[in-house]
Image (cartoon, rainbow, N blue to C red; front, top):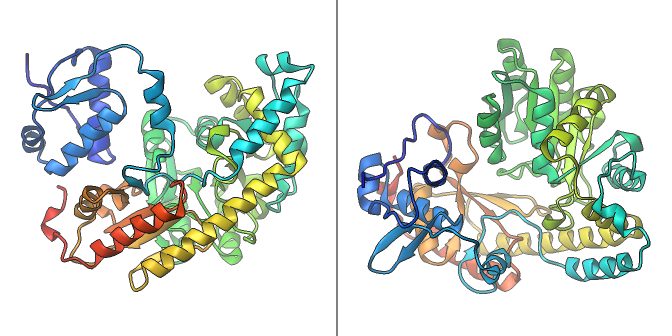
Length: 464
């Protein structure tokens, strides 16, 4: 057969992800068939002008996604078709207490969510209205869910109406819904220069043009935002004012007031991602409080309670509620009523407060551990956040450091994951401390990172 080579074109994003996606597309289009042998990694790296590490990482990602399988002594092949065994699926979803230490996933600690879920399911078992959770529902038909969500959001200082809350399948779905409702193909979408990685894929699929805005130690630069509004026809800004990913910056109240004033002056709509907003015990009021008529506020239960609930919340000015609800209907019709009921019951009976308090205390304990182990290194962190931002010394390139850490059993993400302009990726890595099931594994992983930082490194390993 003809040797397969991906056409990466001018696509943006980490090269290893683009290669893995190209493999998936090749399988879907029939270009790659079951049992086809993949090119030798070194050869593919040479053809594409990339490092061997990048191609190896791409193959590993394709194996993780179920596209490929490796055979010792024979190479890598397109995976056999058919369902993945249940045991394998369950193993892949579990938080392993062995194997590589994973600092790539920004998810909350395990906590007591499972015990709370067992109690909720036991209560639901005796309900006389179980059939309702298997039928179509909206906030109008299930006001209890909207009321609980509104009560939960008021904890952040928002003065909101129950009927203004829109439920989604998590914050990521809320972001997609917000873009569907407020932007059109060809529009310019303003973002912070480093931001939530999936926004790049969303913009690509929706035909939006991303324009990154400069940041300083206080977060998004008001001057850069004002200039962008004057120089472009941009009407939408996406930002993370609280515990920004990846930088961990939380905008001050004064900075939020400046951003809101600029938005009102230019009639700019803000999509405020507050997914980490429930972690700090004290935080500035959301942008939505400063510019309520210009802000779509979104958050979810994924970071403060449990990621598997997939229950998110949108709150927006009245003029946007109908298009936002239409976008929810278009993309998923509705969040699953059963999950919305569980989240609502937790909010109402106080379970949500207890679970969120656990996340706060665990985040603080793990951040204290990181401060001790990484003392003396260039680390930006918030004592109440799940992640930290580590600038690397000059003798390390980010991709070389990532590969070295992985060889020692620690997985991290480099700065290129979060930048809009790949050519300006900072020489830094993000570490997420909360996904690992035990503090002992977090400590061991941080010790490995600290040890690597003190090594000579390999400045010649920069990825082209």
